[in-house]
Amino acid sequence: MGTMYPSLSGIPNFFLYAAVGTALSFVFAVIYIRITGHDEMKLIREGNASAALALGGSLVGFALPLSKAIAQASSVPDCVLWGAMALLMQLLAYAFARLILPNLSDRISTNTLAAAILLASISIMAGMLNAASMTYYPTVGAVIEAL
Image 1 (cartoon, rainbow, N blue to C red):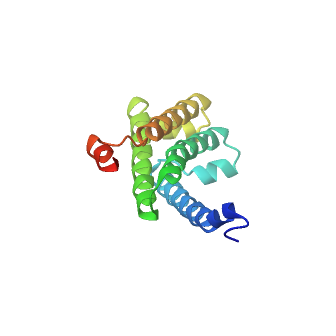
Image 2 (cartoon, rainbow, N blue to C red):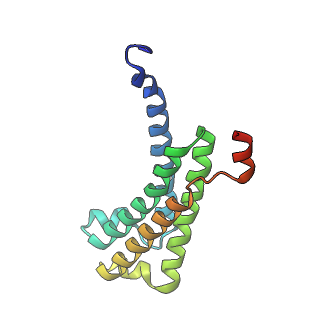
């Protein structure tokens, strides 16, 4: 496989990082669903669009920096560390949304679309900022060492 199809040599890493990303996403979803004041899955099963939008926005907000972490990870532990940072920041985004809209869970439970749009927007904004913050800029020492 190596010389004839050199790009195939990356397949094991593809599956490894895809598995790590999936696992981290699952962990995020479980934690996120447990800390909210409403039962997203029950509400979604009942057709509550606000719950689906809010949860979807939070998942996208987490996936943005996670994808950045996977793309530039130097190792699986490095990826997990930055994935954990993305998880923490996304939970802080949810806390911020609850701070500015204290009855957020009640509004989502009653299918108030405006509350869900606000939460989804804050979550995606936080994810975009977190992903951008994960960009690696070498220190002066690292540049000198590279020379």
